[in-house]
Length: 331
Ligand code: SF4
Image (tube, rainbow, N blue to C red; front, side, top):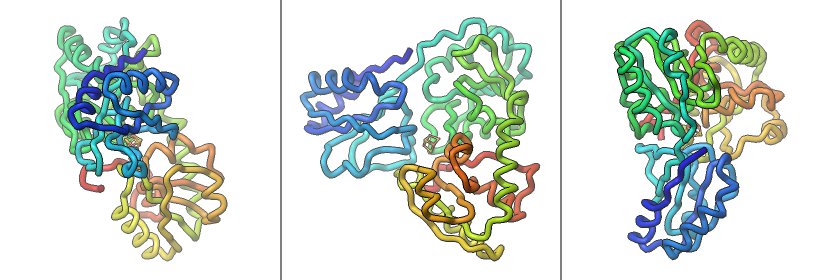
């Protein structure tokens, strides 16, 4: 289902004369890590060390291995241009090969032009075809540029919707190519516009407005529970592209101003057991915004996003609820 072309990475490894290479492969392609490692070793001459730890984004590059490797080959995510690493990191895309079928035609009646076209990283190869398809069906289309965290026009990350925001005044709806509802709901909350999802694994397009209630009910319940909390742990992600120390300090200041106790916590991999043993009444994550939302059922204690904390403390209204985003200048 995914197309991975290692030729460019191999020639770059040869050019920089890399001898030892760390290979990161996303969860969905881990079973092919052996094949990729063999290909790289055979054609570049470098020794490959496969990183077994899960990797969900370009924010997560194994900097702890930098003293033993000459380079990292990172498969499956686009680079985050605003991030700088201490060693060469070669990003290799893994593009979806699932055909769109009739979904595009079916989506036309659900959209209001001009339409902002967006895609999650694995489906970027479909983007140009979808733009052309919509235009050939007579719709006006916009493709927004993102900030320094985004490397392709129209691309959205679970932590950044800047390519949607950049055209929000020009469009009346969005068409997003991607699986699941997280990114689409993030865009909908960030822009207030209708979002239709083209999920290549489904037969029909989905309008996000019709499926958002479950997630928002869950978030409302977490915020309610956190109202009673007196002590807060503010989590800073250790991963190189998730370290929002300034944001965490701002939240600590806000909490103390509102007469709550607050301490900063560093954490790499999120784990409910770690939070249980720390014993705070509630936690705020400044790391990957997806963790608090996707893993809500795993945590006994409220795990909030920064914007949810603002609602708890009365400095933001529930009507202005948005998903958390990381911007280019935060790291
Ligand atoms: S912070 Fe989360 S959403 Fe953003 S790139 Fe990393 S894993 Fe993806």
